[in-house]
Image (cartoon, rainbow, N blue to C red; front, side, top):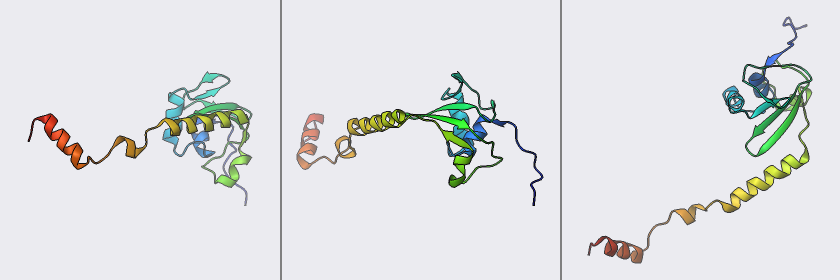
Amino acid sequence: MASTEPALTSLRVDKWLHHVRVFKTRTLAAAACNKSNVTIGGQAVKPAREVRCGDVIDVKRGELALVLKVLALPPARLGAPHVPACCENLTPPENYEKAAAARKDRELTAPKPHETAFKPSKKDLRDIREWLGRD
């Protein structure tokens, strides 16, 4: 059975990023575009910018900078196994290494929950009461 839908020649960049599973929702994809985290040819794009097959899109997602080439324009969100048919990942391995190092640094420098909040001991409570002038 042949599809009656005409083949897409262009698609909004926020839709494409959502359809190929770069972002979980289209709203997140549009927000990334509005924050200038999505560029095409070095130029920041708005969510309504049309993409065509062959375009190379740079996406900054947290510490990771992805480089994706548009191979196809899916009409709806794809399942994960079908994504490679629609986009080619041109991201250099150094970008993944930088993102992993930044994530590790952030984890090492972030205070642990037990370091920021604690239950005061009886002695701490006595000291606090004394400092406040009670007792």
